[in-house]
Image (cartoon, rainbow, N blue to C red; front, top):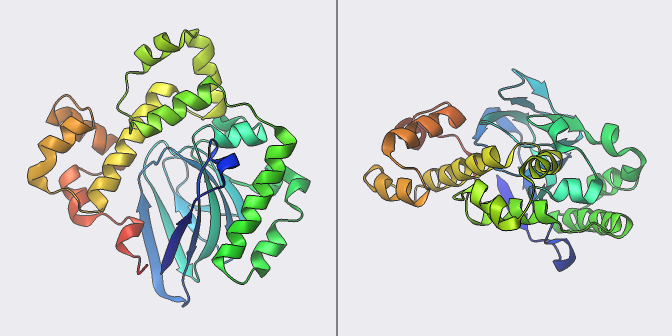
Length: 272
């Protein structure tokens, strides 16, 4: 199974975290279940493999369209895949999709929405070439060209919401959002409305999502062992072990010890 990330061009860096390609050469002999914690990122995905299902806190079973966008995930979710895996996508920085496309991101929280229902004719020259492309680099180049055209058309400004959301990502969710808003000299209610519009959830909840997402990535990569958890808890800003366990279980549905033992994140299945 092949999974690779690609960096965006300098012009798109304020709004795009990366592109990705995920594919397998062979048809899976049995269904594959991939778990994912909430990451703090929205995305657009173009599927050139077989359709698959998503389970999350909002949908018991949701079949993904051929082209779709995902908003913020508020809790862990699962992908149930069978057949051939083949997809390419854009991972946006937290406010990036809204800045580039003017979308109200609160409408897409915990959703997979058909891109043609949202963007319509602007996708006419995107899907076909992606399906026909001969390799991952070509597919990513097509997505880059698509976004550069949108950037030139929209000419978005990088505002305080973008700055704050990206700062929360950079600090891995370990921020005091109230103090941050005071430092920015913003009206709290107005800023929270803008954040909900551009990110999809409140700034305080987003910081919690980002912190848990980073923590899960550390545990899934097995860079931490159980006897190192006190250091991990401290680094991630939890004030005691019970707070850490309660927060982790709320977002993932598993206690940390079980997650380390039996997590089903994508990194466990990759060859490359």
